[in-house]
Image 1 (cartoon, rainbow, N blue to C red):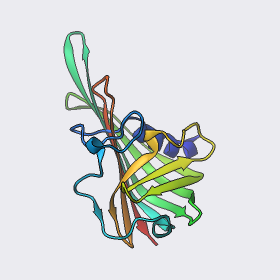
Image 2 (cartoon, rainbow, N blue to C red):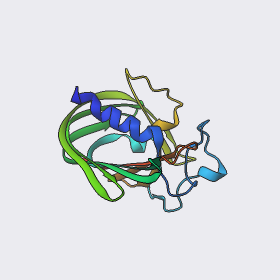
Image 3 (cartoon, rainbow, N blue to C red):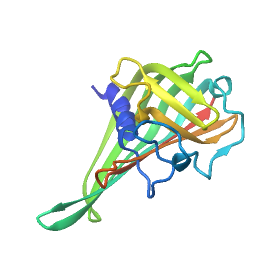
Length: 195
């Protein structure tokens, strides 16, 4: 059951996205527009192509931050949730035919705060045995990660990551989203190191 938790975490990270402003967000119809272009601090120092993206990587960071606010009994509640990975023993292989496999394990620590007070924390181990495909868009410095056997549409904005840093040895991916009809914001970061 925990083996699919990574996918669910990744999907949830992709599902909402988080940003402190409206810049650099995927739109509902998933177009890259003038308002959601590649982040200005993007550091792509290596040609972003499927061939260059392909390789065997270790995951070095998985971090989800989610903020929201709501009113309960007339009081505003500010909620902050984090999910942070550690103890990575993972292999994420991106092939030149635009497919991937993801195997291994890691520890995930979830923490939730309300109005600055920690409500809970939970730590658990996850097993990974996933596969799928990916699409590199060098013009917009993005990569779309599509997991096999799961109900996620390849055009879904939840699968779209900005490549914020890309070199011969490292990749940094960022997905940010905001719910337009609520105060929910989500930010998902993944960092990879080539073997």
